[in-house]
Amino acid sequence: HTVYCGVDTARFMPSNNKNTRWLFIGRLIDCKGVTDILAAWKRLPEEARPMLDIVGDGPDAELLHGYMHQHALENHVSFLGDKNASWIAENAPNYCAFISAFKEGRDGSRDTAPQVLKEAMAMGLPMVTTDFVDVPKVVHDDCALLCPPGDAGALAQAVLRIETMPVEQRQRMGEAGRKRAKTLFTLARQAQEMLAVWTTLAGR
Image 1 (spheres, rainbow, N blue to C red):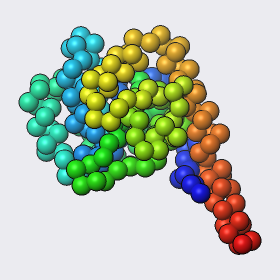
Image 2 (cartoon, helix red, strand yellow; image 1 turned 30 degrees about the horizontal axis):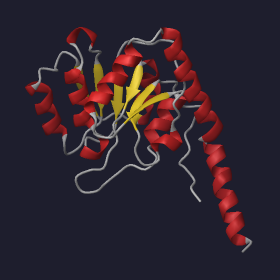
Image 3 (cartoon, rainbow, N blue to C red; image 1 turned 60 degrees about the horizontal axis):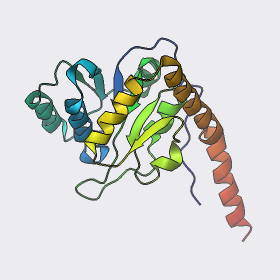
């Protein structure tokens, strides 16, 4: 029986003060797919390339900075370093959209049901992510565009699709994500799920 980690939907809230920037949050390791995200940004026409803020740190930081400089992405990509949950709850809701690109790492590492996606849904952010492991069980196509893992071209096309959407359609994606988080992934819901598992085991 699968019980997902819950998200505090009273802490991670939507905002009406939207900017035009995209957001990534996560450790800078290969299974998070940040290289694929940067490769997608390189593929985007410069005039249609949005600003991207990368929040997090990790062993691939130097490699990713090098990729950014090599492909002259400095005017469109910013590395913000580690940020705590308070910063995320305060600032992340103001972004235009969220992007992640989960895939299997070189050492076989993988994210199963990433918590950051549930937080992004709770904050009402439309998402671009990958069809990897349990990600399609966490998100839904009404709140996220799913791409094959490791496919920078598909990521770029999905970003362009959201960038060219009417604002109202992006808002509907965000609202659908928020509704899904509140329906399926609240702390209370997951606590009830866990209690039900233990109750069933105790009765055997």
